[in-house]
Structures are given as structure tokens and as C-alpha cells.
Length: 127
Image (spheres, rainbow, N blue to C red):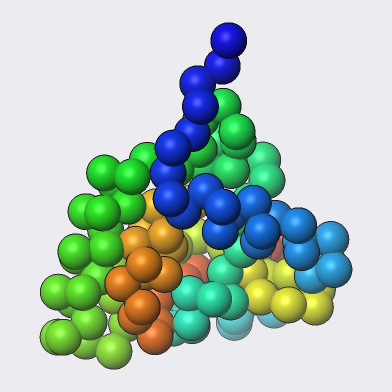
């Protein structure tokens, strides 16, 4: 019998994953885009279906999300974007970014209703 995820954020994740096919696949990006940290709305980020954060048997951890939510609220009062360490993403063809690392920070930002998070795009370069 598997672990049952109790996180209140998991329903948001499941809904986000349903729209993933319409957003397209990761694309190759210009090296200049990969060389800098961007500030974007957390709503532009999307859960990665291959990450344990998105899996029914593991899922998000409420206490980690709560900690990142508190950090986001505190940092937002000091800066326009939260978290010094950027969330690592791949740019998608049509809509937003696929999270590779930083799901709990993303969830904390969503729960804290902050307008911007830092991201680093790591898609391969154009050939």
C-alpha cells in the first residue's frame, strides 16, 4: 500500500499537470537567455510530472512548503522577487516553464501570493 499524499497543494499540482500537454515540450533557447536569472510570476511555472513532487505516492511536503511560504513573505517585503537561489526550469514551446528543481520553493511562492520568483533557464542551446 502506497503513501497517501495529504498536501493541500497537491490538488493544484494535479490540475497544473493536466494542462501540460497544451504547453508544449521544452525548446532549445538562445545562450544569452540561459546566461541570466529572470524574474517571472510563479504562475508561469509548471510542475514536472517526472519529479517526485508530482507523484501520487510521494507528492509535496506541507512543512517544507510552509517554510518556503514564510521565507517568500519575508523576502517579498525586501525585494521584488523571492528566493536568492533561482528555480531551475526549461522553457516550454507555448506557455511558461517546466520546473526541474525548486518545486517546494514554487509552491511556497504560490501560497504566499508573491508576484515574482527568480528562475534560471537550462534548456540546451540552439543548434
